Length: 473
Figure 1: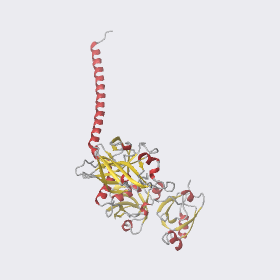
Figure 2 (figure 1 turned 90 degrees about the vertical axis):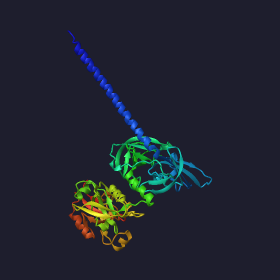
Figure 3 (figure 1 turned 45 degrees about the horizontal axis):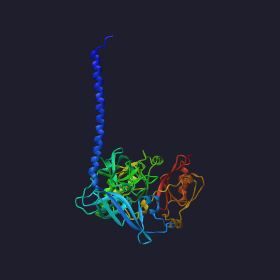
Figure 4 (figure 1 turned 90 degrees about the horizontal axis):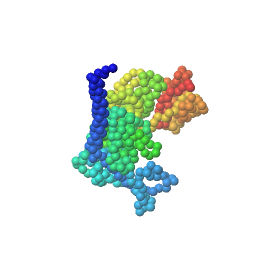
């Protein structure tokens, strides 16, 4: 059989071209990875001079640990804080560390309250190695943000990014001083946004990241690939004191507003509405005729507050604020606070199935807003004994006379007991009908469909809450 040399040459050239193209593609891919890595290194070089190491110290009085143990006595603080014994036998010196970002050429540095809030002495170590004393400008424990200042007039600064525009999955870089290892850089992504109910601070809207954060990173920046600060590294989720892939950063939008207030007025201005609120689950959504569980349900409107002046009512469901969709009660609370005192906000709400727009001029958050800090308690349902609210009981329990009926007994293993109802709660509504006496309560319960669920509004001495009560399994 004769072999065609032309075909052999053609196939040979084709194979050579294919192999060459594959090799070229591999090299191109490698070069792309190298270029991306180099670009990331360039970003870090641009911002490192604006990231500082913070060293703090304070002297605390030694106490009897058996009666009032110091938080520095636990394992975590023993690992990351060094104790010294001054000449005074009844006191000791504590040293801690953290990180910070220079955000103003005149030396204002953003960091965490838990890093510098209780310090007697604050030392800032610049990227050059120079050590300078810092002055505490102000702290905001509810957000764990603090501002300190060093002398300067042309210091390197980090540019601000837009934390709202960052998406889950985008790459981020954390820079700080974990375990005292200055200028440590870690790389990761945004794992989630809007994290709340974690129990770290009063106002939580955290960016979650898997960029490695450890003790000493606190107060340092989380930056995007433009080299802009988009968060303040604040906390980690950990079971052993070290990194486990879950870190939290305060969004720079929130932190910047707080920083500006601390610099300009010495305290933080937060808006206040004066309502009790709760999240909406599927059963509440059905009871209120809602299409979904988005929004924040108003459970009470307090007297002499901006909410009362604007005509807000219990049972209103806030679904928007200044054109922004409200997903839950935590977001609503944060948005109201961020709007600041004396500002006018536009609320979009659902009231008895109808959408309404209401404008509210916010007040100043009280120094000790007991009502605002209290979370609705989860209790209420059937299997209860009630009695009229007498003037004596009203005065004793702090309830308004003539409102609701008082729970005096709860049957064991009843629906009420399973729901966590408590003696002393006041029932003020059943299925959206106001209850002022026992007769109204009995009549309303008789008309209710208990198997499908009954909507109760319960009041305690601190707050109030809507709860669905059902005898269904």
